[in-house]
Image (tube, rainbow, N blue to C red):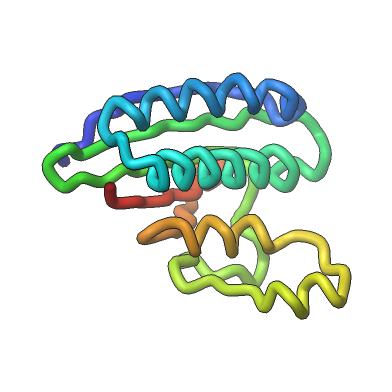
Length: 145
């Protein structure tokens, strides 16, 4: 694998307030490899949504660890973001989320809670999927630059 880890951060699910600081760290790491503003904004949004989802949903409102790793392959011009937690893959949720869509108008009309973050991640990235691991799962998001 030609991917190089450029960022690794451990967070607690109770620390949503530190996300703004971590967003700046992610933005700085992404800017080392691309100056395309849309790609930078997409990666920061993907990071924010993926980490927020893990912090909110993985532990049922209780505290738990969330680990973030950002990899890059400069030759393939691709970022890979992994967000690890000790939760389980949501029941009924597909493992490959690359084509995950939500009818946003319907979603808003019904006042649904949840799901829009994954929709946004899928729309901004090239590939998204869950992987079950020994002590939980990770969400992997890939984006070319």
